[in-house]
Amino acid sequence: MATPAILTGQKHVKAKVCLVGDVAVGKTSLIKRFVLDDFDDRYIATVGTKVTKKTVESTWKGVPATLDLMVWDIMGEKGFRALLRDAYFEGSHGVIAICDLTRKDTFYDLNNWVQMIRKQLGTVPIVFLGNKMDLAERLVVTPEELARMGTIHNASTFLASAKTGAGVNEAFKALAEAIGRRGEA
Image 1 (cartoon, rainbow, N blue to C red):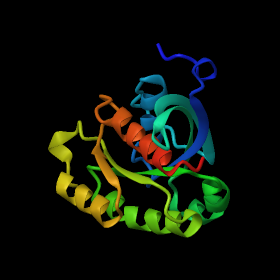
Image 2 (cartoon, one colour):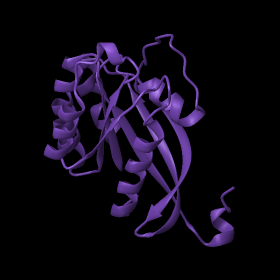
Image 3 (cartoon, one colour):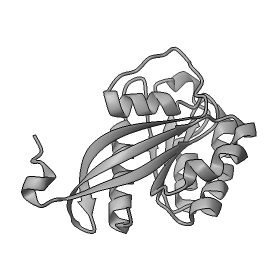
Image 4 (cartoon, rainbow, N blue to C red):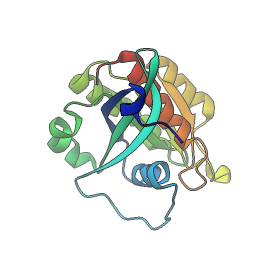
């Protein structure tokens, strides 16, 4: 069990993290897996935004720290992006950009999300996550394509499954570490 930051003098920081990606890529399911270690295969579209918190141990400017990740989930509908963009991204410290590995169009649209992120936030840390890797027989986005996207944007990439939990914690941890290296929360 981690020692409380107050007793150890450890840095305690809040960081706003946004998840972006098209409709039904699994943003809400990934958050539920990360925060509650749970999965529900019923699809319920996110309306507006939802904020969830999870505390993780990380580093902050090279020293151990506790980060309260305030994870923001946004609806993926294209028509609402511009409407929610300003308020949603305001004050964000990092972003997880998600595609559905079984739908190539969601992969291609990551470039549009990155453009929006860069326009609103500048060069905050981004992690690319390809979700639904458990659907092996239906995959159309290759690990190499996702890795190339990461290289182009100087970002880490992860193959994950909200259903099985594979790769989920690792992606969030990588983003927390990248935020901590910047030390700007």
